[in-house]
Length: 311
Image 1 (cartoon, one colour):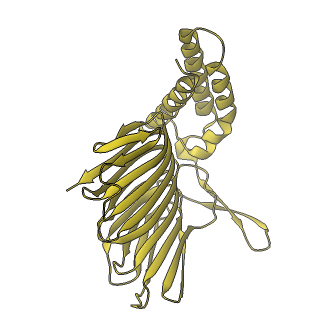
Image 2 (tube, helix red, strand yellow; image 1 turned 45 degrees about the vertical axis):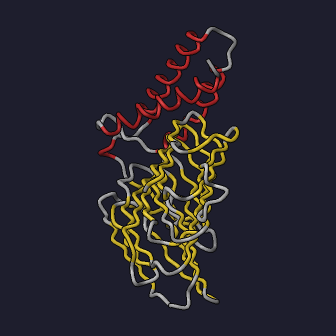
Image 3 (cartoon, one colour; image 1 turned 60 degrees about the vertical axis):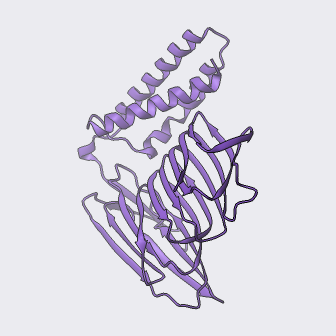
């Protein structure tokens, strides 16, 4: 058995049990507190490369996982006693400590009028946990609303020479404790050619871009659920995804030529209609001659990865 299989498999089982116990109300799980157990990763990696029989490695790995879960549960603060602590840093780097309770609801909305002179638009989003959904199109350049009990966002638009740059950034608060999450809904104008740069962390991400002209899309995600749909309104689209323990599904037009490059460690793949050219290199048979080309680069670990060609 490969060393990496033991390492990643046990890590996935451990995180899975912590998430399950969280859903059952047995403990309160958050990534910040889990990060304190980083020595567990070193121990687990050491177990995976020990020169002993496979069954002994598995037993040792499970013992380490059980011990780490026990340590986490002993150090985790009970759910009913926890608050979210926000740390703010201003321009002079002075330190302020404020407390935000989880029952404080957030309700934000933002819109920017559309100028017909804008032919290109770029959306950059820096966000943490939550649900992010593209709900369709709008006559404005952008309309967004953010609701829930998580983080607030800052919005900024810069426009010059027919191009617009939209910055959506989570406020620089570090939240400790259970985050009930945000629902971030978005609508975009269909006229410009769009570029996207998303840093979304552990999130649900559902963008149906079939009615939008997308030239470039970059996603840097953690433990995310990513669903994308690309239309046939532009000749070339480049997609780049760097994700951790994620589920990734990309839907593309059946007639489009598509090339996939990258690595998916310990991942399940669904690439029907693709030919394997080389290790980590897949193409549709019509890629060279297709009038529409979609290039996908993906670097994912412990993930499911699918590219579906739709009629």
